[in-house]
Amino acid sequence: MTKKTVLGLITLLTAVTASAEMRSPLDIAKQLGMSNEAIERVKKGEVVVEELEASSDKDLSIALVARIDAPLEEIYEFLSSGRLVEISTAAQSSGEIDPTTFSMAEIELPDDVLQSLVDDPASTFHMSQTEAASIKTAAAQGKAQALAAYQSVLSSRAKAYWEKGLAGINPYAGKDRSPADDLGRANQAAREFMRIPAVLAELDAIPSKSPGNARHSLSWAIEKGRDRVAPVLTHRILYAENDGEVAIQRRFYSAYDYDALQIVTGILPTADRRCVAFYLNHTYSSQVAGFGGGAKRAIGRKLMQSELVAEMERAQRAIAGK
Image 1: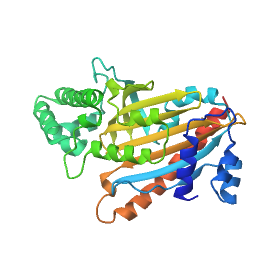
Image 2: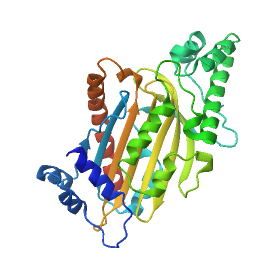
Image 3: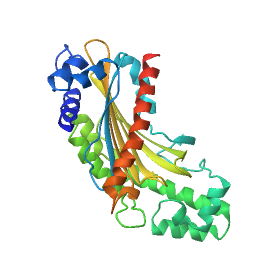
Image 4: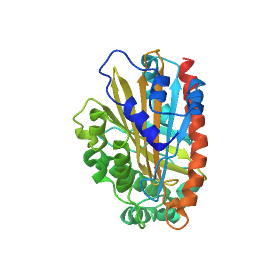
């Protein structure tokens, strides 16, 4: 399936339905010129994948489209839980962030990671030079003080983001290490694929000042990625109306594996009481930038594709089996 076809499919799917008569997924596929092979895959319930044009040399981007055999009302709870938009990392602990306190007191780190934070904060987790210096100063008093200082860093990042949006995100130390810039590019890419004004308005909204009806929430998690346990901070936006749901998951802080990510997931109803789901993923990693970045991105996409297809297939089975 070509990028143009994916663009047309998502644009059509995310247009507000003005008529009570909705098309079937196959009608949509045929009208957009999908190949017979792709249509057969849709009919079989397969997940159709398209690699998107990278929004920067750090961007690992991909889109998925799939059919889910369940009515919209049965999918709402599943979508709002965030399970459909999670990447394949193992969350060892997690919690909601209270926007009145932004407390991170529940965050704990394994002893070996905490010792690394004491020895060399900047090499342990992504952070600014000022943040690393504050932790280094605290670490002179011991591990407990180092952890408290890092919890304070995370709390300050969450508060600044909640109150200022992308403008409140501090860059990491190093060249071109700005999650705010990365997520701004992800927003621009999303605008090229969606046509729901209410959702588009939420992309640039300051979470604490959102004018729309979408639900905004912040959370933290300690995740095990490639080879290290590390914290992430997440902003979730959920837009739900009778014509469908769109969920946006934005990692505005990631301590280790990648710099930032944004996932946009939509589920739209069809005339036959099924739904079509689309999934747009932009993951930004400094490890794929620079010389040889094209090859690194290609490898990264292949790895990400296999994980995401498996995740979407699990979602199909879980929702249909409710």
